[in-house]
Image (cartoon, rainbow, N blue to C red; front, side, top):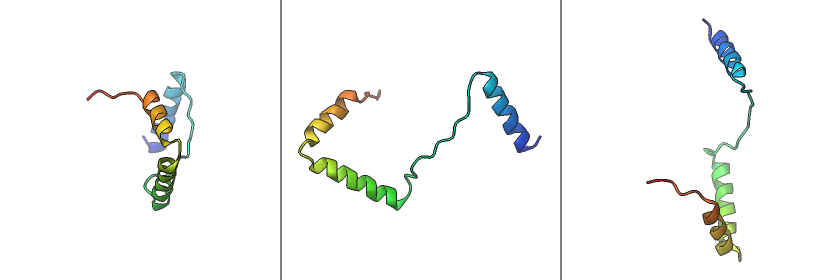
Length: 67
């Protein structure tokens, strides 16, 4: 069975189970551009007058993971 046939069969099975396929484009976190922009934004947040409030908010909405 070709890859194309296997993929088609898998997609049909997923549709039968009530799923639908979507495609999403997300930033490539491996790029230097992404790293630089993430750093720029994190420094801007850290330098903000509201940095403490921002961090408190993040901690309130964050889920603690089991160790």
